[in-house]
Length: 543
Image (tube, rainbow, N blue to C red; front, side):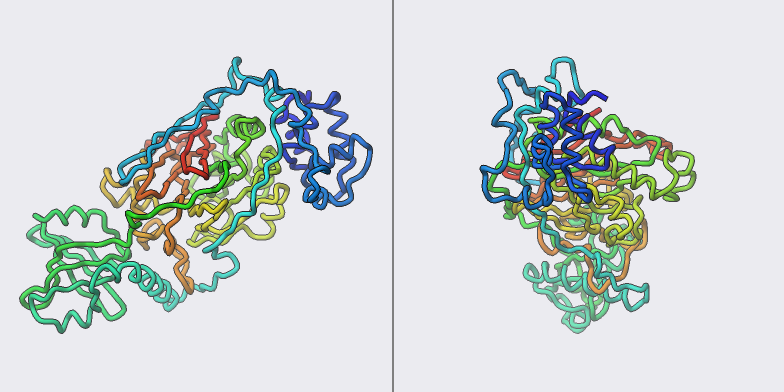
């Protein structure tokens, strides 16, 4: 295969088992004899190397082996490094203006405001420069290692005993009630029972039951560690609309007054843990970007390989020079036995072969991009949330790119920006339970607003969500994230809720028979790109 483009160089290296830094790919593509430069670089690399560096290419030109590639790559003396931009001719490079436009984003002040965002089509056209031309100005990225917190991997202790479920719900209550007690004068349920009729009261509790009365009012029963107590929401009050947003098991505070018999609270207000309206996110102190994707589904007959390769192509171009991070929010593969009849739609039937194929696709991504991955419901991990990261066998299969692998959910901090990554199975629950104007598949970010409001990624237990009982509730949002990243529903949606950027990414799988049956038209081959220094966003299209 001719090697006139960086992506073809990357593919050729992948076939030989190597991932590669972008600088190495550029040097090979710009060489007088790309195939010879590639073979020389491979010969110069140590036998146990999985990443080809610019140092290997340079050593290949000198016909010298590189005994310690990490030491060369991390050399402190800048004079020992070669930047291909120093010798490349960039005079004829015409980058597409569409790819270079920075979207003007007005920072919204409420949840209903959606940032103005470019949606750029990166399907190659005859007017665009070839990748060989574009590669001339591309250098190596230098991402910092991601910091990962709130990961259950290696900390799971649950065995499924009843007492462990009590423990996890108690932990949920203690942590979320702590966010509410500063806003109301909370009294425990057993104390409220002894208070005088007509007293002003406030109670913080988990929603134990929601039911309507014969007169059409709403009765909301709250539970704390001392017992339960009912609150009545009158149907003619504006507060009645808030009841439509309540889910079982979430933590709220109710304020009101006691009835004449002290048997219930006449509710005047309902408070959620919520994100403070005064919240201001952290941003990076340099121009750097992160690509957010999910739901690759390698192994499915509907996996759109062409879109993935266009995405990988783009990552090798100057337009993606600032993209130093790739965050993948679950469902790397299609999986096996996830739903009835799935075997009829599989291109690869063995789960390990699916991960091998995914690993090969990952090799097309430049080796100097920091990748962070969490599992999803199609991946080969337990279905109950929180989900631990992939086991050692799967990690070994996907080791070529040296990706950071963590659990679902996890908080990933890059360049000082905290990104809560959650695959998003609970979005199905919210879309089924809440009114259409609060949660829908067409606008998945609005369902994400509800999770931010409740400060929990999967508040309702017993429906579509499988909960693993742990010593603590890893699904609680103790800290407000700067970015909330989910997938699962195969639709692109984004917006800002109290200054938190909520992004639901699309997928790399065309419409399946199941999606046709429920009228879901997936958003395929789209990659949201976030400017970490401003939290502006561009959605790139590769179909």
